[in-house]
Every structure is written in C-alpha cells, then in structure tokens.
Figure (cartoon, rainbow, N blue to C red):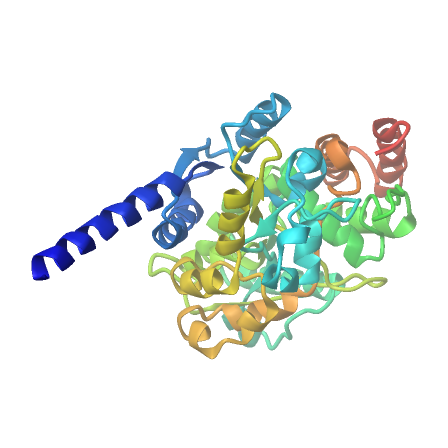
Length: 420
C-alpha cells in the first residue's frame, strides 16, 4: 500500500511538472544595464519563481539616445521578438501607437501619483508605460555656508542668486578662489531642456507646448527666465557651465567649490561618501520659484512598456504590473534608493531610516512637470532639440530671451506642421 501511494505521488509530481513546463512562457525584455537593470532582474527573478515563466534580458547600450534608436528600429519593423521595453518617460508620444494601452488591466497602479503617471499617458488617454521610479531634480545647498553667513534657504531664484553671489564673494575674499555660487547643467542636450523648462515654468512661462498642443513659449515670462540664467554664466556660475552635464556639476560640488547645485537624487548618496568634501555639510530643497510662478521640477524617470507586436502580451502585462506594484517599491527602495511612485511611501518611517533623503523628496515630488512629449507625439525629439538649442543660444550670449523665444515659436510651428 505504501509503495502504491509513493508511486502515485511520484506520478502526480511528474504530471504537475509536465503541466507547469507546458504552460511556461519565455519573454524577451529590453533594458539598459547598471543598478536599475540589476534591480529589475532581481524583481523579475521573484516573478519567475511565482509564475514558472522565464525572462531573457536584452541589455541595451548605456546611452539613452542609442537605446532610443534601437527601440525605434525594432518597433518600426514590428518586431515580435521583444515583448517588454524599459522606456524613458518622454517616449510616450513617440512610441505610443506601438505599445499596449495598459489602462484596462490596471488596479493599484492607477494609484500612482497622477503627475507621474501622466508622463506615460498619451494625448488619447492611453497609459502605455508603468513607472517604477521617478527622477526628482532638487536644489542642493551647503548648510554649513548658509549657517556661517546667517543666510536662509532661498525660495525664489532671485534669493538664490543673491545668496550665491554673497557667499561666493565672501569665500573668495577669505582665500577660496575656486568657490562658485551655483552649478547646473548648461550643455546643449536633454539635460538643458530639463533645467530650462524649470526656469520657464517657475516664472509662469508655460511648458513650451501646452497639454492641448498649443505652442506657448513665446511670452515675456519665458524670455525673462532664460535671460536670468544667462546672467549667471561668469558671475555665480563658471564660464564652462555652458558645457556642463550632471557629473560636471557634481564634480565641482563634491570638491566643496559650490554653494548651490541643481541635480538629481543620485547625487545625494555620492555626495555623502567619505571621499566627498561636502559629506555632512549639505541638504536639499525643492527648486526655487520665479516672481510669476511656483517651484517646478522637470520629471525624470523610467518605466516598463509592452510591445503591441508581442505574441505574449497577457504574460508580459502581468510582469510589468508586478514590477510596478507597491510590494516591488518596498522591496527595492532601501537598496537602490530610487524615489517611489506612490505618494504614501514617502512617509514610511522604516524606509526613511535607511534612505534619509526620502522624506525630503515628498514636496519636490508634487512639483514635478512632465516634459511635453505626449502632446507633441513623435515630434518630441525635434521639439526638445529646438528648445535646448534656443536656451543654449541665450546662455552663451548669442541671443537675448525675447528674440530666442520668438524664433523658437516659429521653429516649433514648422515642426508641428498640420498637427502633432
């Protein structure tokens, strides 16, 4: 009797395994490498154990631009081999018609912060990606220097400019001739689009192209914002700032040679390392506002999307939902220190003990502004080049703000043509 029962148990196990393997599906997932890629792979391993499915990761080039080109090639060819793409939040307009509308399949993901989810929402209201983290630019400031000179944390760009100049002058008079007031991203690339959009929007100058597709950049507030930044170059910011990207700004900051810095959350942990000259001497706050607007931070971040050409859409959708739910956020926040996409997690005391930046990010997370990629559809790559080129011409002194925004409006109308 025992032998019969044992044989039946073995048979049942064989049948179970056969059934399990017979229904197992293999997905192909395109993403970049680095810590974010590692995080996705670790979470996916848990999903594989849970479902019995298998995921093959296709590692993309480190350059976001190169990833974009590869994705465009595959999607244009209606490639069915790639099921899931890790996407930049500005690609919704470009790839929206080639990615699955996830909205009908969502539950808790619909509770993601509305401003964050909107970056993955097309003009038609389709949600074509699920964010797993959000990029939140902030103003880094030297607590020791503000205390030394009895200065308050600035709330406006004018206050920041005046404080930066005051402390820079005092420090140089004391012998630190390498001190600068403010470092930021001034190179002609997407980073300048992010910076300049913050200046313009925080001055009440709109968001280049509004949600209804209206081109709004040609206005006095936008011009004044660009002129403001131009005055920083060579005064509170190095002449070389017109060629800076994120790491260039952080390099000067980490050496202890800047009072203020505009940068993303990744710089927090790096600036708190032992080799940084500013460890324990700084804090962050949301970016300043202009005289006619409010604090604005350009949204960064990545998410997951499912290809319309995938032959395994149901399973792929299940995976991207798993990767963007609250459990996934809680499981990775301590190790990877990426700002979450659910607002209540910013108040989690347990996470705050290991990720001390977290509570400070809550305010800035509510001031995020998506770049107008959804409303400009597939023409966003041309729009952003036109915008950061115009901004660069102002900060390099080639044009004044009024001229630049007027000419930019004409350029954008040509790009728009008969419609976005």
